[in-house]
Amino acid sequence: MKPNTVIIMGTEHARHFTDPKFDLDTLIELIQKIEPDVICAELSPEQLDGTTTCNSKPEYPDAIIPYAREHGIPIVPIQPCTSEGLEWGNRKRAELERIKSTPDLKNNWDFWMKLSECIEAVNSPTLKAIQSRTYDTWSEIIWEKLQKKLFPDLWNLKEEWNRRFYSRIEDTIKEFSGCTILVTVGLKHKHWLINKLQERDDIIQRYIEDYI
Image 1 (tube, rainbow, N blue to C red):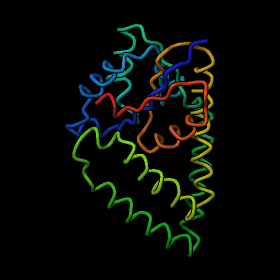
Image 2: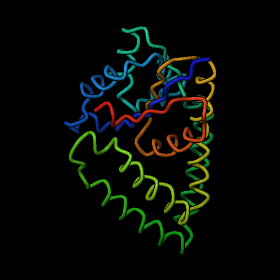
Image 3: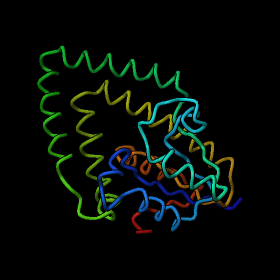
Image 4: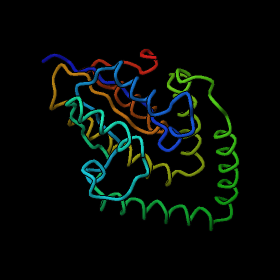
């Protein structure tokens, strides 16, 4: 079997409406350059078929889904169904409440929130910068390594979510042969999935910054 080529692209959700270097038109132009045969999207099945009103990731109904349907590109939803998502979300909220009500952890949380505010205030100068492997490395340090040390139980929940994404990507890799598979996920998931895919020897992994 001919190996699949897999590319992970980070999206910005609602920030596509306010970030001029990565607006929805630029997002679609980047997908056009990649010419994917299939898109693995950070969507639940219900979000894909429009049976839920949740629209936390507007880049999909406003750009990616219409483009894929117009060009006959199948979309694989890699986010669990709504009921599973709600169950996971409830566990995450309970863990956040535990953190905020535990004095030592609350101090860590206050530090984490200040750090997050500083990160959000940084404006990456170019699209290539925010899609680069350097950006992925910093994301891994901040959003994984540091968070895992400060809040191990919270990180375990986030890693569980990433593993659910990866399981669906893995199924897609098995289903297709010799195809270009584009995975679209929020930027904070990107580094984890890239590292996980690097463990495989049955695919060709290419990096999104090379298409910019």
